[in-house]
Length: 164
Image 1 (cartoon, rainbow, N blue to C red):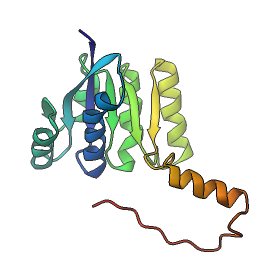
Image 2 (image 1 turned 90 degrees about the vertical axis):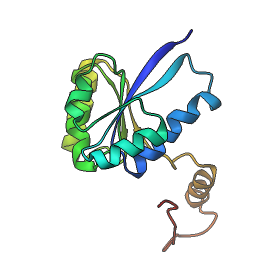
Image 3 (image 1 turned 180 degrees about the vertical axis):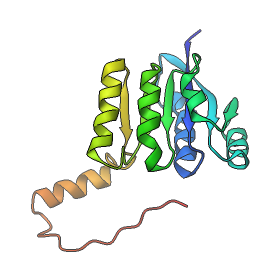
């Protein structure tokens, strides 16, 4: 039997739903050396987090991220909350030995990002920023074409960001 990797997610909005879906799908796409456990979903609003947890199969809920990052049974904190909360959650999670996944933008300033980096380095935990569209083949091709000058000088673009 594989060792369990217990996830705590903070934020039950759109990105929380997207990350929950990724945690559900990961074992179907990758031969993981561990079993992903959606352990606890956290959001300040109980009326949001309870149906969120039920829909995505989170085992428990909390309205207090500070309690979640202190739990001994949580290995990874997945931060999908509002931008102003990223730094304090990431720093506290690292201080408690949790690996950190943080949705973009990582922080509101370079100073906050520096504090986050220092915390994960001191704790010796893994950390990453989620850039969901960065490696999409169409985006990579467009970037390459622009860099090579194949489409001329870009002066304007119009894009759509497909989400609710």
